[in-house]
Length: 135
Image (cartoon, rainbow, N blue to C red; front, side, top):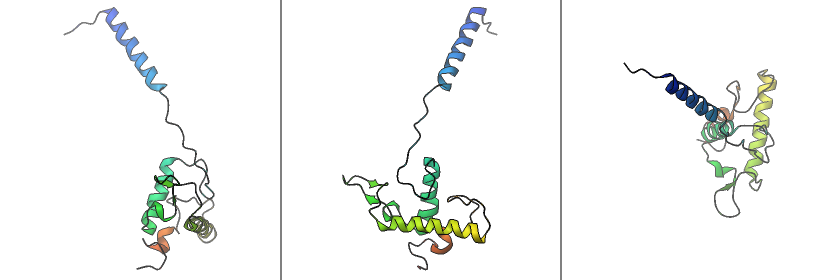
């Protein structure tokens, strides 16, 4: 059996305390600030936003990001804040419509896009296709 003397025990305790303190005060990743959100909440987290974009839009409509989002002017990636593509405003109107349907007909007091409590979502009509009624 190893016996730790008093001095070593104190050093170990101090080291653990310092390590725990550093870990607790480590800088957190910056909160993303999204621009040009008109229906979704401006304080939405990146996890929530990606969930809506992937689970609701990509799965519900069978489309990828570039269906609604315009290419960046520098040719690298997409310009998510741009309103250059009319499909983006159509998507906003569809979000407003589904929120309204859920509130009026299904009595959901505060419907939120991406919430599991919604009865009417993109997939209700689109069924995995870009345009409702598609095969």
